[in-house]
Length: 194
Length: 213
Image 1 (cartoon, one colour):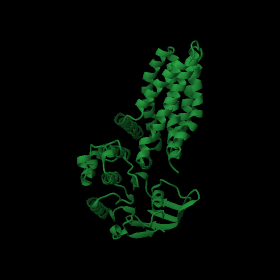
Image 2 (tube, each protein chain N blue to C red):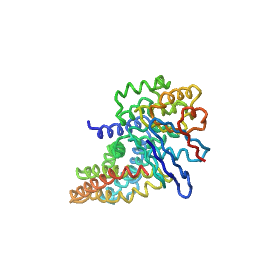
Image 3 (cartoon, chains in turn green, brown):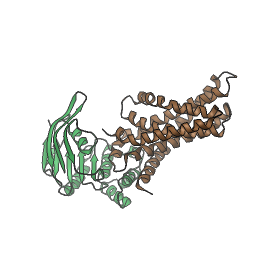
Image 4 (cartoon, rainbow over the protein chains, first blue to last red):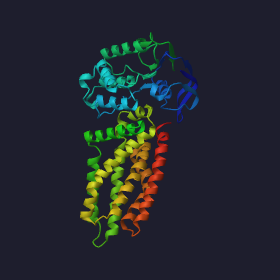
């Protein structure tokens, strides 16, 4: 599913990532760990196709429609409601039975009551839950999750634990986290960046 | 409705909805264009003639458009949404076209107020002049949406957008003023149409490279 050889990424003179090599089979789960500034986010952006490597080879065998990316930002419009945001993404991703799927995800992530509120009025945790709904909306084959537990309260984190546990083995998952203990039992491969 | 058109409609409708809700752009454009026309009305010497007034109309329109373009990608910048749109499986040019149509809508709305105000304060506008405005709008929004997307990813976007946009708007001003004052206004309309066609195609084709590495 993913083959990376000698990946390097530079931003001007600054080297954000160097010599990253790994392979990932379909249905594998890769946990990316490392201290702040080790290049976790850069690597995940490379895998998502949001940035290009300066050097090295990267092959990701999925179409854009099969990729779900959760970054540091929620990638949703603050002045739209949760329903409107998911409806827009559902249209762009050609999600079949878009309304039913949107409603089901909002219910599952505890946002149904707030579905008609603008995202600007959400707490950070609610926004992160909505971002997770967005990522899962089109049932991607490859999930790239950058610090998915950020801003989630304990209930939200447990909910995400359950979601991930259900997806492991069925989808390819790449995730970075500062809490490796939380997810390392799910990981088939661990990549420690330094 | 084909997938591409459906994407463009969804994206443009989203921009109109955001504007109706936040009212960030259109009121500012309206206020600016009316203020500019009022200032020009008092700045223009008595007996300066209609030709000078038509020139000032185009100054007001170009800078009003610039105001709208500077805000065009603000909602996407705020939540990193442009990354989300770029990752979506739609043709990336649909993102540009949706934004161009929405920006065009705001500019036309501002002009619906500005052109009668100009006629009231300065001189009447004939059909050729109005056609010039309509054609120039297309070029302004097509090129401007692309340049605004380029500028949006930069920290100095407030500086970069005018620096990129104003030189490229010169042919539009030439065509627009020509269509307003020249007895051969049709030639200038053809020139504006050609500009629109060339730059709309270039912007449509190059947008993908602007928003990806």
